[in-house]
Length: 433
Image (cartoon, rainbow, N blue to C red; front, side, top):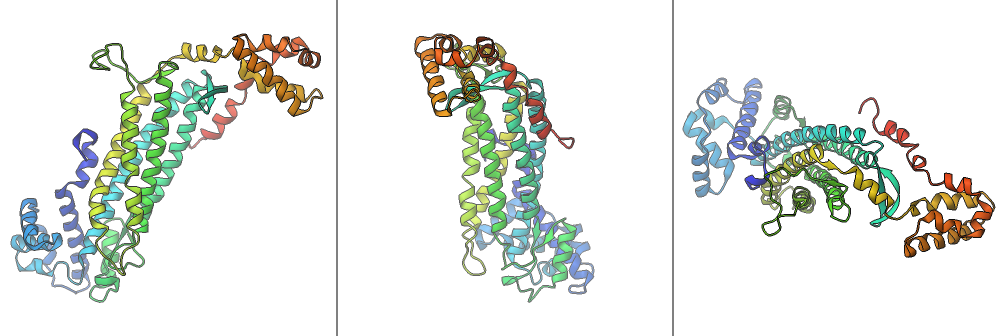
């Protein structure tokens, strides 16, 4: 991932140096187990720890000749440590190291992303409570529907990202496995106790059965969850982008004094951050299909998944980490224009009270289909003639004969639409939230 869209903490997980250091940890942990069970001579681990040193350039140079990264890595260890390093990797296969390492990298990346979601949730919750009763128009199909509050809008995102947090925790658990089972996973040349030791040492679970590689359904699930989180992120970003449109102008991204919106038009304040988030979400989701296609490998293994994972592992996690942090900054600093929310509520002169009138008519003996047509006619007149919906209703004798004027007027009450908000907030923001 390019540096523009990456943060240091997560980026470092995927650096070559960290990867080789993880390989060394795995090899040392396996060697410790082998010493413990008298499979290799005592003292190997002590010497490897004392003399081993990761030389990234040397490993890559040797790999360029031998065309095998793990052999290149082990060769440099033998050069640094001496013959004792030849006892490393005994009975193991390359995938034991590569897959266990990859899962550690995904786990560590996932834990950072979990923290990102926690921080985002904190700021969504704060804004949702602040705007609990900030009235705005709800829209379906992009058309004015009925009143809601901006707090409720935000609360939907709070709950959605709470679900994402739960999903990711499950995905991290799913991916946190270790395989040290040797060629085709039969333990023919490596003791299963070694695998258990390595798993405990690295805070992983033992892979119950591997085929030389860790089954890729685990990885497909992990990347699918990242894709779902990215889609939630985009839904939030798209909502803010729509609300910032000139014709709506209810919410906008923070715009600092020195910021410039357009090279040509000085008046522009564009929603560049949330537009950027939409693009980044596409990149994260782009990893999902390749991860799913990696599940079906030939027989016990092939390496068609390898090149895919070398790309999607760092790219998807680094991008999502960056995007979540960007969204958090948007949420905590966004400008909420209450006056424009009220202006937009008044734009259609009360036609969003149409359902209340419809329901009132049905309680007074008019069939629903007839009541619907009566109210619809008045609503269309209100829109076409640009007159208040209430005035349009007053002109219909069928309606006023059924609903007294004093009752009709009470139907145009905004508090009717906010009276259950506490119920919703209490359902979402439980004590544990």
